[in-house]
Length: 379
Ligand SMILES: Cc1ncc(COP(=O)(O)O)c(C=O)c1O
Image (cartoon, rainbow, N blue to C red; front, top):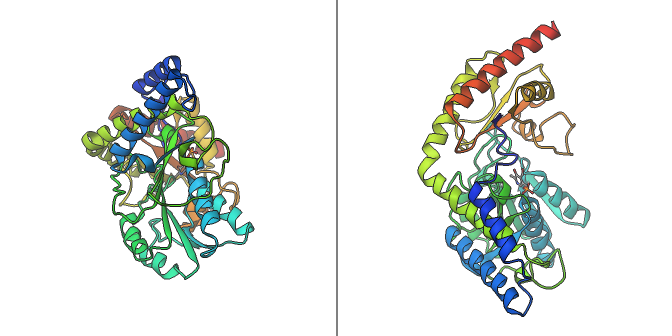
């Protein structure tokens, strides 16, 4: 099998599975229970929180464990909007956000909020100046992703953070689901108030994730109950999930510091080889995350190519589902100004730190053969 769909999800690291299993077996107490067994689980959870905070260079009380990226984004966006609506009801985001941001904003529009969906340039990048220009007295939140999940384009988070700092009354949320472990992202003194991470994108487990919430940031809790996770997210804590997430974070950050050049080189090799296939068009910009390549094979349905490759146990994907556009058109690519022919035939290939040159060669060879076979069928 050649797995090149790592932006959809990743294979858990064995160490992550081990830590989940160990904690589940040995520390299954409820951290809220007052007996010693509960206190042991509570201690473990609090250690995991401290370690996550250390890895992100923030404070332990700023870490809220969640079930993943979708929850983190919803808690951040709706939580800020509902808690601060008396100050204003305007939100700024971009046209290329993941559905968990985009649809959360759409829901808020139904509740009377106004949302500015900023355009992007042909490289899939939002202009920091556009963010600044969109700010009004009513603006309470800016939500811009770090790395786009379809194109791999990188947003000017640092610059937007500097802008956000000049408006102390508004909050800045970053969806860092695709950037964490690939591109360093400083939080301290960055202007970022909230930042989402998902476990299963970094070789952790599905159902794990965290939201960084800067100290003294008030958010309206979406779940009411026992007041766990600093009252941001009630519900019995997933202690084993939190411990395994921290393990995945540590391992991926270690890989980021030691192996990111290798990953960048392998992605460059992939692009070079794809450029040699004359029916393939590269959509990913030159300035991109080290692991995502987006291509189009115009006139060929992406699903057909994906299934044909799947027959050979090679796995890649098409765009993320987004309800605002026709089902077969990528909303991200059309926001970048790509024509319909390109945005309806997009494919995403996403690597991980273990992807080998051999796998890349085999993939490109199989893609060439697949296109050749399909063109024969199509006559
Ligand atoms: C940029 C981005 N944000 C958020 C999410 C949602 O994360 P999860 O699958 O953990 O809910 C994804 C998943 O594809 C993503 O790519």
